Image (cartoon, rainbow, N blue to C red; front, side, top):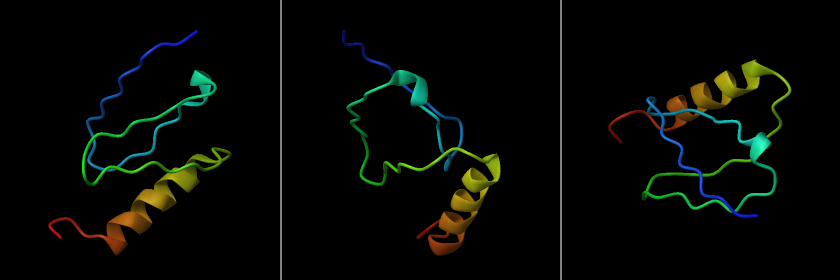
Amino acid sequence: MQKIIQISTDKHNCLLDITNEGMTNIYVQGATAAIMIQENWNYSVQNDVVTLLNKLIPSGI
């Protein structure tokens, strides 16, 4: 079975949990979009990753 899901966000930087989708092929549209695979054991990990990315790549660069 195949299905297409579309995900939109209201944030500039965020991590989304798509585990419920099972086995997935992902296409990310946009020159600066990215895919990251990580464990989702603790919510603070998501905050840490977004905070680190904001420090490494400040807005406007």
